[in-house]
Length: 129
Image (tube, rainbow, N blue to C red; front, side, top):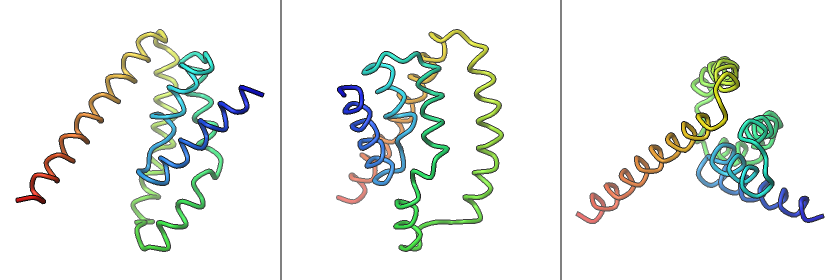
């Protein structure tokens, strides 16, 4: 029962963040499964990809589409490339030691976080000027 509660919490947080800022799988689900439920990095990534293969974002997409905030043409192009990239990336990841995949994963998250924070702070300072 405790595992179910943890999984429901992970799913809820990932869903809210996905709808709010467009993230969820890699940033929430993977680390939560690794650190809260003891998954290996590869198990967490595979489970996150399974979740993302479901129509989990349909209602959030509906809200953004209704507001006119979806570029369908660009989205289809990115989705097609995402399919191939996901296949290639999974092949590469499974050839590396898990520790290296964790380091790469963490480095990418740290880099993206730093870029987003910097951009946000710049936006605030420009807005106040």
